[in-house]
Image 1 (cartoon, rainbow, N blue to C red):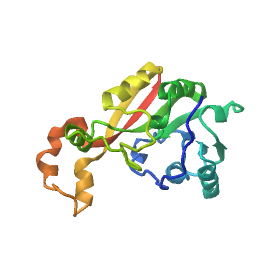
Image 2: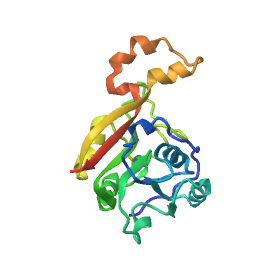
Image 3: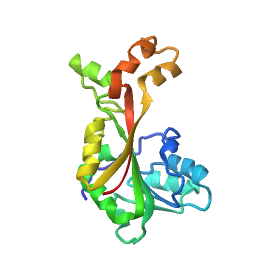
Length: 223
C-alpha cells in the first residue's frame, strides 16, 4: 500500500487517556504506528509482563527508539500491513492511535486488519474530530490553518467526524461497539489557567455535543 514518507516529528506520548478503553482480557496487542514507544510503555504497565506486544512503525528512527524502550516483544519497521507480510501472527487487539487520518486509504488498512485479528479480537483507534468547536469556529471565520500537530496537522490526509468514523469502520467490515469522546474543550481550558474564555466551559460546554471533543476513541470488532 503506497504511502507518502512520514516524518519523525511527534512527541513520545504515553496516551494514558486511551488506557481506560483497552480491554483488560487481551493477551496480544499490535500497535500500528507506535512512534517512539510511549503507548507501548503504557500498555506494558497495564497488561503486565505476560502480554505479547508487537508494533509497526514507518519511521526507522522512531522504530529504533520503540525497540530501545524494551516494552515491545517485536517491532517491525515499515508501513502496515506490508511490514507484516512475512508474519502469520494474530492479535487480540490492534491499535491505531492517531494513525488512520495519516493514511491514503484508511478503509483499506482496516480491511487488511481483519487478516491479523484473532477470533473475537477488537480494533481500537483514536481519531481527531474535525467537528471540534475551535476548528468549526475558525472555519466559520474563513480560516483553515494547518499546524505542526493536532486536528489540522499538516500531514493529515483524511478528516473525520464521529459519524464518519463509525461509517469508516462499518464500510471496512466491522461492528462498532463504542465511540467515546476524549480530551473535551472544557478539560483543556480547565488545565490551562491562562486559556481565554475559560468561563465558557460551564456555560457552553454541555451544549456543544460532539463538537466538545478533540478526539474519539473507537472500539470495534469484525462484523
